[in-house]
Amino acid sequence: MKYVVLIRHGESYTNRNGILSRELNRYRLTEEGIEQARFTGEQLEGLKFDGIISSPVLRAVETANIINQYLNLEIKTDERAIESDFGEYNGKRIVDIPDKSRDELGMESFKSQEERMVGLLNSFNGRYIIISHSFPIKCAIAHYLGLEEEESFGIDIRHASMSVIEAEQGKVLSIGSLLLSQKMKAILKD
Image (cartoon, rainbow, N blue to C red; front, side):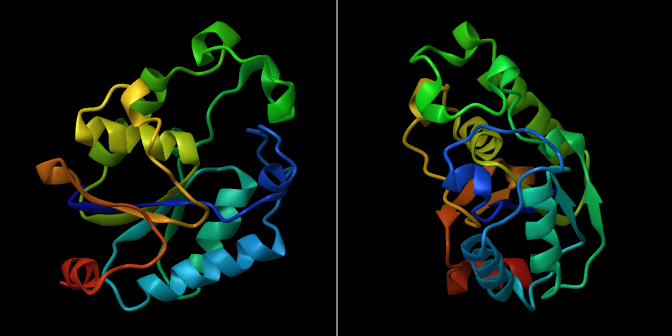
């Protein structure tokens, strides 16, 4: 992939209620999440992309469909963009989860998410938008920055934010932005 814009889905009812969920069809975007996705779509309008790849989770698919109203591209779903595997904590409230590492809790590892996201980026040529989830996006960014899991804790991936990576060069151009700068727009327009 030449350039990729990694976008976290807009706010969903999982976020509003503090629930961890990988369920495909349960949690929709909130009204705020819909507005966030529209704003991101407006930021991307007129830029050049070859397609949109979305996590199959409903909140990501809804975000992809809203953004695509501004771009009119083919949307593909790909399991590699899916939410983290939360194991037995899927569907649980975050405040009810013990304060232990992902490995101790039996959740999908940082390394697993990094490998699947980087594999996804490496399997397409051109310029793509990938709609995914906070932690998988953070893992991909950490890979290109050469960061380990603990070093990536400060990376903030807000709802409907955009992180731009020049994948062929392994260069992170933007992290968690709600607005695309004129420089980013110029890069993505050519």
